Amino acid sequence: MRTLIHNGMIITPFESLIDHCLIMDGDRISNLFPEDNIKDVHIDKKIDAKGGWITPGLIDIHIHGGNYADTMDAKNEAFDAIAKFLPRFGVTSFLFTTGTASNSQINAVIESYLKYEPPANGAIPLGIHLEGPYLSVEKKGAQPEEFIREPEPKQYISWFETGTIKLMTVAPEINGALELINTGVRLGVEFAVGHTIATYEEMRVAVNHGLRQATHLFNGMKPLHHRQPGVVGETLTDSRVYAQLIADGVHIHPVVVKLVLDLKKKERTILITDAIRAAGLGDGHYDLLGQEVHVRDGEARIASGSLAGSILTLDQAVRNVKNYCKLPMKDAVYAATYTPAESLHLNAERGQLSPGSRADVVIFDKDIQVDKTIIGGNIVFNRE
Image (cartoon, rainbow, N blue to C red; front, side):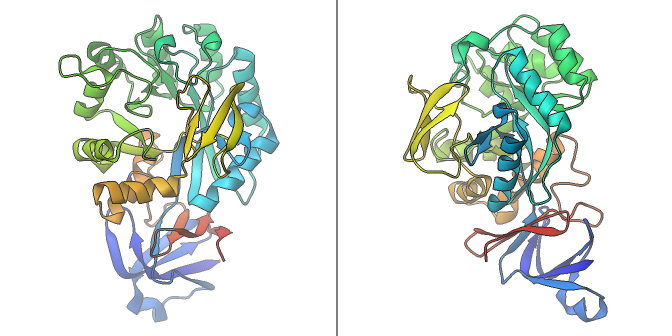
């Protein structure tokens, strides 16, 4: 099946192509070319972008859940609910993200994931992001303190050897963290700093050992100080480190989002949601890691007042960043597509529209609202 997408601005996201078309051949993109040449190409189906934006599928590497479901539910039904929910917001692939929990609870998620068969009409899971349990109690946020602990080599090696763990958030200052990072990097795991009181020096040592991301920068860590730059200072000044941002206007002020983009650029900024099971729903009370979360006016908080993830969707993050920073559309899209793909070494076939890459495509209307989401060449969400 050769499908043509036309009548829209193509964001590759390295460039913006006017008056161009895209051809999907099965589950791959086979060509991009000027619209004037349509008559010379055999196609089976046409999709009209109606003057909107044609972009790569969005990639969320830090999402706990949505639509009443959470990764920690560790059940096919919950995994399906999350996967089917995401295309509505332009997400075509993602990492199931855990929270701090007991070994048995984390084992249950991994075991369920190993047996999981994603639905044809859902976003594609790329693996698991372990947020914890090896974090700092002082910056626990909504992570349950009773399960925060120091790294246990026998346990984490068993997790890594399953091949399901693609990213892990850790506090690098705790005992055993550097050994954990060394072991994980050797086994193909990426590491992020988060829920931490690490100093600038401790963060830099962790980066030298292979840590490459900062989980929801500014949140769950000491603030930037002119004499104690900390994790934020190292992240903002080290080109090796990607900065994850929750651009919902709650976790970070829009001016600070712009500051990060000015310093890190789109190439080292990853838009994430950190969304919980309340995402896509209204105000109310929800569960997160056994704690009650109260959602009101776009904010999710536990009883202590700490923010508890978000109800942000990734398409809204793209709109927000574009508006906050007055960015070209291609730059806002880049931070939600190519950069997260690159951070997981998946950029050869995800996060871009180019011949040979996966046919994971989003069509946004002129107001940057998701009109269609295409995964592997098939339309899985159609707003009409």
